[in-house]
Amino acid sequence: MSFLQSVYAKLRRHPKRIVFPDGNDPRVIRAARMFNDRGLGVAVLIGKREEIKQLAASNNVSLEKVAVVDPETSSEMPRFLKMAAVLERYKGMAEGDLRNLLMTPNYFACMMLQHGLVDGLVGGVGSYSASLFRPLLQLIKPLPHAPVVSGAMIVEVPRHEFGDEGVLFFADCGVVPEPTVEQLASIGVQTGLLARQVFGKTPRIAFLSFSTHGSSAHASATKMSAAAALAKELAVRVGGAAGLDYPMEIDGELQGDTAIVPAVAQIKLPDSLVAGKANVLIFPDLNSGNIAAKLVQYLSGAKVYGQIVTGLSRPAAELSRGTLSEDIAAVAAIIGLQAIEYRKLYPLEGHGL
Image (cartoon, rainbow, N blue to C red; front, side, top):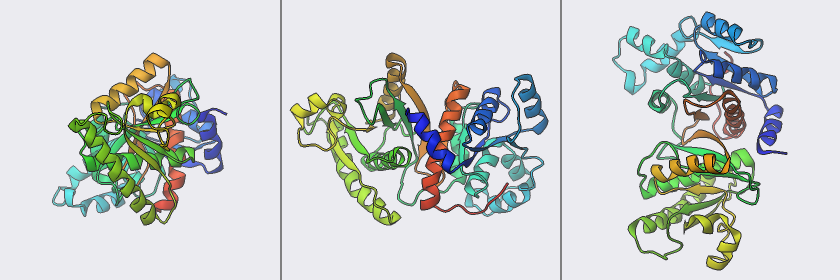
């Protein structure tokens, strides 16, 4: 069973509601249909109802069982206005201005997510990253143990001897340009939790560098070593705070080959529980993480899903503007699967559409 087939099988047992703020994009409309047809839950498109209906018809896509919500006519708007008006960021904003803001699909979708009308959000294909991250950061509560929001990519490579049957998690690939030691530690633990939620296996987290365990005393290598040490402490605190046993194996600093190649690890770190079998790779900065994900995708023919936003109390994904329908639907399934665990850890407020 492939990675995605396993995701679909798990999600079919616990279907979820996923909101797509880019509801007027034909790729998203097709992805919503795929999500429903696969029995994964309910897809919710945000946008003008007639426009979406016309786009669906012109692309020969049925909207049967696909929910369409127009912020301008939604019965939830008065409630959302009251909820947003008490937030510190929006206090003093004129009601008309606040209404116009919440009618923006990204903002309306984030309100739906924060207040329990949907289980997850998948957006970004119709706008630049900031257009989605801004409402996500303003309206979705952060996790109490996560000092930073970051982005992870799920990478499925053709060679199944790497990671878990060819699946690895890369972070941070899209949010924090130059993370501090504390931020790197949090990124590592949050990505490890994501890996556990999606794959159900013990995260083996490698903090990457050009150095392995002190082979260089350069500041950047020392920084990754310190981040790995701090992540070990943070992982214990996060597991205890959640009341769950979320074991993680963490090591660093490690070179890339030491992290994923058993033969190299046997020479350099034969006693490590991570070296040679890492399934979560934490990069020193945004440059290295983003470049690595792109190169692996195009040079090795890997499938790359994401980015999955970590550090928020609700599951969400921010996709590239070039993402195709099949990949949008796949990420929606991953977000749905992640929501199963989120409902256990962070109960949602409110129900229904």
